[in-house]
Structure formats: C-alpha cells, structure tokens
Image 1 (cartoon, each protein chain N blue to C red):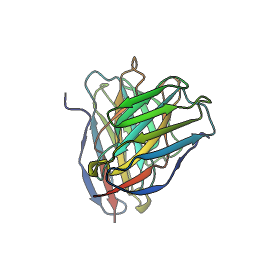
Image 2 (spheres, rainbow over the protein chains, first blue to last red; image 1 turned 135 degrees about the vertical axis):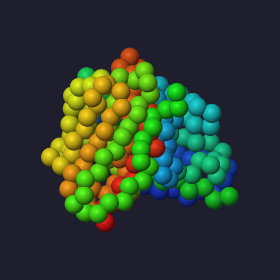
Image 3 (cartoon, rainbow over the protein chains, first blue to last red; image 1 turned 90 degrees about the vertical axis):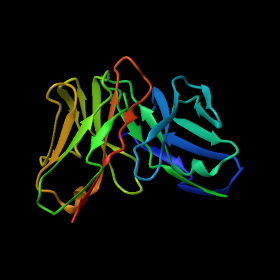
Image 4 (cartoon, one colour; image 1 turned 135 degrees about the horizontal axis):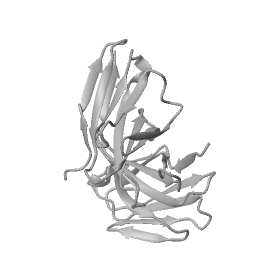
Length: 112
Length: 114
C-alpha cells in the first residue's frame, strides 16, 4: 500500500534557527499537504501543494512539491517557541473521495 | 461556523463496554471522514461518508466498529465490546467535494479503555 516516510523523526533546535524536514513516498500523489498537530488537538493544515515543482509559502513556512511527485519538504525559518508540535506530511490521492494518507510525523522542539 | 466539533473530548471506559462518539462537520461540507491515531503515529483512515452514504471502509474497521451519518450532517462512531487496543485518538474531518485542499479536522476524542 501507499506509505510515507518522514525525516527526521524528531528535532531539537534553538529559537531563531531554521528548520527543514522531508517526506518521501513510494507512490505518486496529486496533492501534498503539511499539517501541524499540538498536544490534545487535531491536525491543522499549514500548506497545500497541487503541482509538481510548486513552491508555496505561508508566513515563515515554505514547502515544495517534488518534481517526481513522490516527495516534499517543509522549511520553517527563524523558529519560535510556538512552532513546537508534530508536523505531518500527507499525500492526497485523486479518487472519488480524495483519500489523505499521513506520514508518521516529525516532532519539533524549540529551545528558548 | 466554528469548524469541526467532536464530543466527548475524552472518554474512559471499561473493557467490554460500548462507546459512541459524535462529530459535527462544517455545515457546507458534504464529505466526512473518521481517522484513528495512536501515540507516535500519524492518523490512519477508518471510513468515509459522502452525504449520508458510507462509501469506503478501511480494513482497520473491525465488525465491532460502526459509523453512521443518518441525515448527511453529523456522524457517530460506535465501538462495541471495547478492547484495550481500541485506546486511541479518534479524529473526524470534513471537506467539500469541490475543494482540493485537504481536510479540516476536529480536536478528536481521546478514548482510554481500562
């Protein structure tokens, strides 16, 4: 079946540093999504990517849809304490119900 | 509209008991999804509704699980004869079929089976 891999599994960084995390898949996706989840809450959509090669920004966040359509990365610039959480990449398949498949997540800790 | 609402937020139950969770999606969203998330993992798909029709079920959804969306609005997920392995966060999400920008998730129901 379709599986997503995320790296790194966890990160501990100093406030102000830039962060980069990756997601790879054995399958092609039509849409790549990046979500953030905080403890006790559901995932919140950060960025959606629709075309191979697309580079999209949302504030300090930048994400790219890989040319092969099998990978994506997320960068966070100038990290702040509220960036703490688990970041999930997700691939969306164009089917009758646009199923979304999630990766295992990257846990981000920001040291003030 | 305040987003996707799930109740209860937390549920502790004894093994063997039945539990039911409710999800109220965003009002104009005709698609509704249930996911399950265990500690340290990403959400895993359980089932999908378009309006009131349940169109897809994962193999994760055993016979003890049943989901309904009787009027195409809110949905319920029932687990019968709960087992300790059912302990997880149960997430509901909704989307509009014309939009290709992922789902909006609720805050989830945390189930603990003791």
